[in-house]
Length: 213
Ligand SMILES: C[S@@+](CC[C@H](N)C(=O)[O-])C[C@H]1O[C@@H](n2cnc3c(N)ncnc32)[C@H](O)[C@@H]1O
Image (tube, helix red, strand yellow):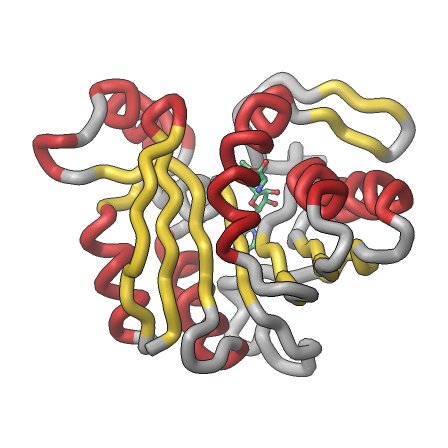
């Protein structure tokens, strides 16, 4: 039987269905500092590529008003998300099987006020980023936001560590790679979004906020 291709590049541990991401343990506090003020009261948030589900729980514990929908195409990740979600008193909904490369992934979904996606578009084919922008256009209304977190390339300004990361991703899968910020901005603009905030984060990551225009 062929082995499942990797969906992350870190050493995760687990206990039952719960998986522990060392990266999420480090970045969840700085991410929540930037993300929480962007979310309106009682916001309904759709998270794409929720991974272990630890970002969802961390953020929901800090904002008892919000409702969070996790998702991931990977079944083990969804099981982990659901296991962590049990600590959120029903505010994190049962994880959905969403793959943004599927044409109709956004159909039949409930209404959301914001979309959040961390560390996905570099570890998936470019079509996953295009699908994310396309779905966000269908799901979000004027003024609502799609928030991306991760490393990006910015020409000569690109951090050397992100160039190394890009090469290492491409050596594993030529369809992966740290994305050019301008290219990401371009596909979101094509789908009706403006980049309204760009925040530098630890370890040469960034948060990009795309607002539906
Ligand atoms: C590096 S992990 C990031 C997980 C989490 N967001 C975090 O930052 O800890 C990448 C995740 O992207 C998911 N993924 C890969 N391709 C995807 C796609 N086309 N649509 C949605 N999720 C995808 C994987 O299953 C995996 O859980």
